[in-house]
Each structure stands twice: as C-alpha cells, then as structure tokens.
Image (tube, rainbow, N blue to C red):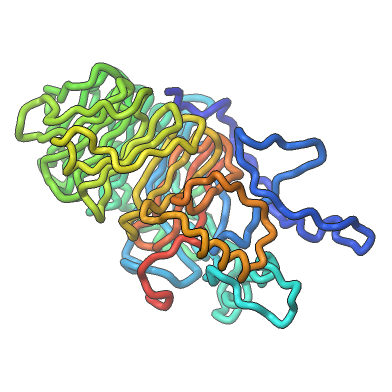
Length: 474
C-alpha cells in the first residue's frame, strides 16, 4: 500500500465560512431538500456544491502545523481523566512529510479553547413550526464562552524538533507521554524525550507563539539502526511502561525492553513470521507479553514474547494487504483489522480455536483502510478512515429498528434524503479532508477525535456519538 502523502506541499489555510445565507433572498427559488452525498456512489453535477452540515457536530475545527503529517498521536495530560465541558485543551505530537528530507520535524503542540456545544440528539420543538435541525444548532457556541470571559477562538501553540527524514509513524508512551518513538523513512527508529517542550507549552499563555517559528535541534535518547528497511509499525505496551515493538517492510519485528528511564535494550534477533511487510503492531491491552501484527501478506498474527520468535497464531484475515489493526481496550477479546480492499473485520479472539473468529465484516469503504481505532470510552464503537476521504464511526451493538427510525423522522421532520442501503451500525460519516491517513480518539475527552490528512488536521465531536458518562461530569 502506498502511504506517502501525494505531492506534499505546505498546507494552506482555507477560510471555512457557512454559506447558508448565500442566495437566500426572497426572490430565490424553492428550497431543494439536502441529500447525503456518498463518494464513489454519487456524482457531483455541474453547479452542485458540497456543504458541511455543522449541526451534526458538537465541535468541529481544522488546523495545520506546516507540512502535511502522515502520523500523529494524542498525549495524555493532567487536565482531568474524563472531561466533558467546553472549552477543551489538547496536547499532541505529529511528524511531517516535508518536500525535502532536511525540512522535516516533529511538532509538539497544544490547542487551547476548543469550542463546542452539547446538542440534544432529538432537537426540542420550538414555537416556530418551521424550525429545523440547522436552526437549532446555529445558535452560536460563543455565548457560553463569553459568559466565562474566555476567548472564542482556538489557539494553536507549536514547538518543532528537527527530524532526520520523513516521519512514517509516531507514538507516545501512555504511562509517560513525554517519551515518544518515531519511525523514519531513513530506516531509523528513534526515542525522544519531549518533557522540556511540553513544560514550555504548559507554561505558555494564549497569546504566546511559544517557539512555533523555530526548529530545535535535539538529540534522541535512542537511535536504532538495526532494521533492514524503513517501516510503519510501532507500538508501546499499555501494560509495561517502556516496552516497545517495531516492525519494518522486510517483515522483521524487534522487541525493545527498557533498561532505565532513558535507555533501552533492543533484541537484535527479530520476530519473523510474516512473508511480507509488517504494516501495524498492537500490544494486548491486558497481557504484558502478547502483541498482534498485520502484514501485506494478508495475515494477522498473535505473538507471545516468551514463546520464541514465531507467532503463536497466524490468521488469513483479508484477501488483500492488511494495513492496520486495533485491539479493544475495553473488550480485550476483540481485534479489528482494515484492508487495502476497503473492507474491515472484527474478530473475537476467543473463537480462534473454532476456526472462524469473524463476528463482523464490513464492505462500506471502496478504497484502502488507512486507520482504525476502538473508542476508549465505549466498547462497541470504533472509527475508520479510508483513502476514499471518509472517516466513519461505527457502533457494532446497533441493529435496524424501522419503528424507531420512523419515530425519529417524525420528531425531527427530517428533510434529508438519506440512503437506505447504509449499514445500521454506521453512526457517522465525516468528509472534507483529502487523503486521510490516521485518526485517534482522545483518551480523556469522550467522543472527541482527531484526524490527519494531506490538507491538515481536523478535530471533531459528532453529536450522535453517545457515551455512558453523565453530561455534567467534568
């Protein structure tokens, strides 16, 4: 699978204004009901334009940090384990794909004042019978923020650290988020300590650029050159702090064990079981010695580091390359995988001995799956991104209920021509980004996702993604 960003150029900021008032004079013709547009299914006729329905989001923001980023990670912070009240603040890291190798860097950034508004799934009826969902959500989110005396505009603060070559993938350690590992297209895996940059961002006020124009030269804690080729697969253990695995395009996987807070012992003898490039790695959320891998050879493998250098289990998972996998942190028996043919599957690992462990298989996307991740707050929910420029959210616990659908349409007086052939498990479709590459849920803000693409980042909170957490839980 081709993972590089197409024609990487500096991202350009585009104005994102609502067009709902354009052409709305009394002399205009009758309103045509909106239609849900499906890439690869619907054609865009001459004169038609796509518009984002912001009423579908509790929060939606776009930004960039310079060059396009193929990979990023959201950092855990000390601002609260579960946060539901706006405005939000997030910390993240991302690696660039610059036009020239020497221009690359890792961006450590902080976004403050992420605005939004919690909306009812079914809008309350007003006195005006003509009120629709758009008008219900068009009330400015800024009113609530102004009451608190805060600024209404999100603020981006960035610190840049020079990186040798493009960043194929970057991951932060969950237990110590200032420690990050990066896979370079030069074939090097490096581990970094970004504590000084995170401290500087934490101390900065909203008016401070905080080093965004400078690129700092920093020596990594570790620079491992033992892989025979570049790679994309890397993951920190959520159970054992500092334990790491990295996989390359020559089908080798190396195990890293922490020797101290700043040094690692990397096993020079690789784990070998795939016959082609290792595309992704995921540690078990509960077992300290168990991890999973996926490969261009179409298989998913389960490994036990105590049982030698061969996989304990190897599954023919897809008919094409398996690009990404995600292990469910709330239901550790569930492993999902996404393929180059656009399909993704969910397996119950308890059924492996019985042969067919697939409990769900979806063929909605028509282009390669580029990222997949279970929600950290709802065991049945996962998000998927694809090369078809769609980010989709799925709830596997849902089944079609025609009576419930009819009741919802009656309450909302829905005028949108929604396709009838969509899977009932499909909760949300986010579009508008080009060449989507990676997504992550925020581990501490239920319902918030971030995604990266060739034209920058999006932060989004779909209004119909529910969590079991109370609305007033800060």
